[in-house]
Image (cartoon, rainbow, N blue to C red; front, side, top):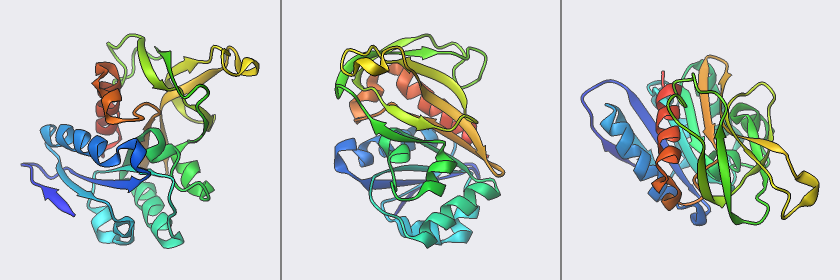
Length: 222
């Protein structure tokens, strides 16, 4: 576990691991640097046992997770869920948050959605900003991605900020389906932010993609 010091008391715990194809360490380091620039003390770990340390979790403003698939123990899961329920923010992107712990529906309930498919794999698609007043999306316009277009099962209580529309070129029966890409929600007293972009670190070279996640993490932090 490494800690990067900052000058304020805002703290972020970043947990990475799982499937290496999502480049969890690289993407986590990208946003660790941005959070540090925003004045956070950032702790980075690849050990899910950190979720057993209730005192450490309660001391955080924000928990950021990039841990695709894998398994979590009941004690680890409940440690995370309790921390967020008590008011610690939670944020993440792509499979690191919405394809983590596939056997844990309560965790998926907290996140607000679960990945189920990416038809066509790496394709060109558009992200549509649907809320231009929210601080996470304000000033951003629709933009193009060349990556996985996530098809998800999502919670209707999410506050959706951006979407994408499936063309049906790969799966004709989903043509015209509008799918959430960015949302925010509550879990108890905690704020939860999610963005489905970010299959690999290079995806965040698209300025809008990086900015959405940066702003979303800042919004989620208490």
